Amino acid sequence: MAEKNKQNNILTSWKEIASYLNCGVRTCIRWEKEQDLPIHRMEGKPKSSVFAYPQELDEWLEKKLSLNANTKAKKEIGSSFIKKGLYVLLPILAIVVIYLLFSKFFTVEKKAVPKKPMTSSGVPQSTGPLTLKDNDIITTEFGPYGKLRVWRENSKNDYQEVWRIEPVRHSSLVVGNVDDKNDNEIVAPGFCREVLDRGDRKEYTIRYFLNIYKQGEKDWWKTTFYSKADCVYEDKLFELTEIGVGNLDGTPGNEIVLITKHNLSIFKYNPDEKEFRLLRSRNSFFEDKKLLLTSVEVRDIDDDDIDEILVTADEWVENETPENIGWLLIFKLQNEWPQVYKSIEIDANPAFQSLSLGDVIKGGKPEIIFPAYRKINGLDNSYILGWDTEGKKLFDTKIYAHGQYTFRRIHLDVNDIVPHEGDEIIVGHHDPHELIYFYWDGTKLVEGSRFPLSTNSALMNLFVSNGGPKNDTPSEIIVCGTCRVPEAPGRFYIEMVGFKGDFFAKWKRLGGEKEEIGISYAAFGKKRE
Image (spheres, rainbow, N blue to C red):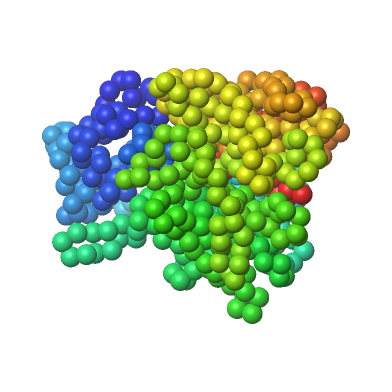
């Protein structure tokens, strides 16, 4: 392995990954397709830049080497270790022979080794019944050893983990009422890979399902995993999903809206069957265009007490996203079918998981707000874009003019955190790492103040509350992602920032347990009002 790769906590190209595994690039690509090599793509495009974590590669390699020697994977991987293995094997054989001779004349007492509890029927195990309070933080980690956790503030203004369930693979979550009862539930989409044998070739399908976690329930309360008719299928891997909850038809009970790479899907709880059912799934929105869905929000934008579905998307041409072409779509549910009510073409590429609504320009209907990237003269620029609900652009504000982004992540949320007219926009930016808030001064969007984030983190998500439990913290911002410090024992990163006229540091956790992975999504323990 190259010394450079040993020291870094993230491998950012096929060449670095191949060097770390001591093999060729084509072999790595084949292992990803056939042997589930843990490769990540942050932009959601199969041909986009890839990255991998050395710890996940080590765990994958160890698992593959422990398989039966006749498997194809071990033959491919083990070939580069045969010579080294000979030098290790002979001393081991000598030790075995000595042990057998010794045990022939002496009795060796064997100590019982406690077995690790196993999950029953594939159900992830939790630490106990779920309890959820308004100001709790819920985080989820996406990966083979991912965890869904609840964090609660104690008397020392510190946040402690009070509940977890593992292993799960959730890249997003939402908190809302999905069974028409009093309490809110946590809804999170998971996925699994399925292989279809087509004779001389194999096809890989990704199946997405919902896990629902309920107050008082120890493990997940409901899941659509066991009903293939109530799952969503994609042809290729796309890790990032997003999910929303709202009342789309005016009848009792809320609907769940899930976006995957190409699909917009709607689920609802059936009180008679006591199960969640897939009502509709749509993956075609224009006759001549295919879209890559990037973010979703479910809110009432026309004051009719029925929620609409808002979606941002990139165009998707030959498995690529063309520069500076995006879409904002507004859907209304009609006869259980999501109809396109309005479509707005955007001269930029919307960011993932970051669509929001707010009343930044005080008065009238809410604005639709999201961050986006626009390439000008070969340079990537980050922007805040805002539209009214009729499709009129209200603001187009540049945040940074930059070079080529190696890690394109920017997020925002909208809430009222400053005591003046209108909501504020909180932007979390990666490279440079900082929080920025913007407000409307009567004529345009202007910058308030900035707060530096850890340069050893990679931003994944941001969420803002409009009131914390303490008087000295009227507003709070969750910032989360991946810790990239080589010496840190884990890759876990979460930071709580307070706001009272300006940003101030409140609580941060970098690293953690050795097996921890980065946080992919976070939210507060209540549905926003």
